[in-house]
Image 1 (tube, rainbow, N blue to C red):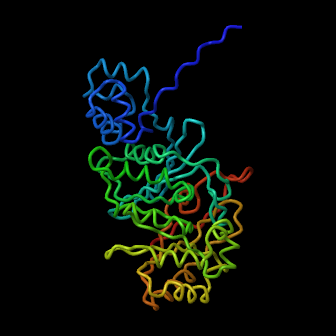
Image 2 (image 1 turned 30 degrees about the horizontal axis):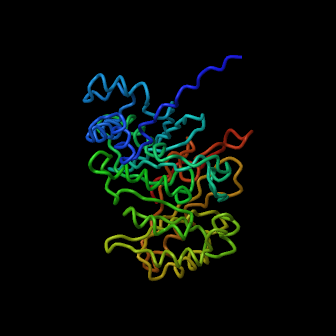
Amino acid sequence: MLLMPTLPVPTNLLALTEPQMVKFVRARGWPNYRAGQILRWLYRRRARAIAQLTDLPSRDRSALAEIAIVGRASHCTVLPSQDGTRKLLLTLDDGLMIEAVLIPDDDRLTLCVSTQVGCMLDCGFCLTGTMGLKRNLKAHEIVDQVLTAQDRLKAGERITNLVFMGMGEPLSNVDALEAAITCLTDTSWGLAWSPRRIVVSTAGLASRLKRVAALGVNLAISLNATTEELRREIMPAASEISSLKSLLAACRRYPLAPTRRLTFEYVLLANVNDRPMDAQRLTTLLRGMKCKVNLIPFNEFPGSRFHRPPDRDVLRFQATLRQAGIDVFVRKSRGRDVLGACGQLGDLPAGRESVTLTPIESRC
């Protein structure tokens, strides 16, 4: 039997870091500045094909096309919500899918970005947590969500904020997260994002918080419980990694810049963690911290045992924190009709195709 020769795997240019790109162009015998040219085409101009790199000589483009590709997501489906939110379903090279969400809010347009396919954690109030972890995203797959969202903006739109709050636990994929944020914030060839407009959210990997500080971005901690027992019940894996006590201690040690503060996210679950005693305990836990609190009324999804609390309980919880001098806001639920709201990203369990959703409400 004759064996067919194995063709070399083309290099994905989008997967190369700046040092790797310099090494790549040197191996071709090209000058170093070619690396910057290629990177600017990939990130600033969102090139999808090597033929678009028109400031490279045609012979170089032809040579490059024989050995390299621009590895963007192969397909993107956009699900529009009645409130203007858009959920993007991106198909990766291996056929797996990830989700990103464009969220309009007055003069802001926020992109919620995923870092994993599925999630390593099993938080009971999050649909992604029911999927398990399929794999970590690579840095270029994280950045591609931003590039793809930019491709689909309407005339006059621009993304103003990035939040790493989509599918997955960002700090469990911290190397790729760091590399992606480097591309996003680089001012010479990257997207030149201000770190002040980027938020990284974690369910509580306390030992890795200092790596977020080094990136200069904002940090949000998904707290959701005021006792160790309740945290173990609703966030078992996160609780095993970092207890509530160790997480809050790490937050108190976190090196905040003078003008920054921590954000604590608290998903309100009816008759679970939304009672007056929970609010009182939360004020005690956060006493003395430079922080704000985002309250997130639970966004329902098929198969969940939790329920969304009524508005009166949400406002009562908020009032207790305000009386203690804590800046506290109620997160507006956006995109719930397309399962695009916080906690709703991911694959639905088999056999569960629909759910009666609470009507989308105005800002509390």
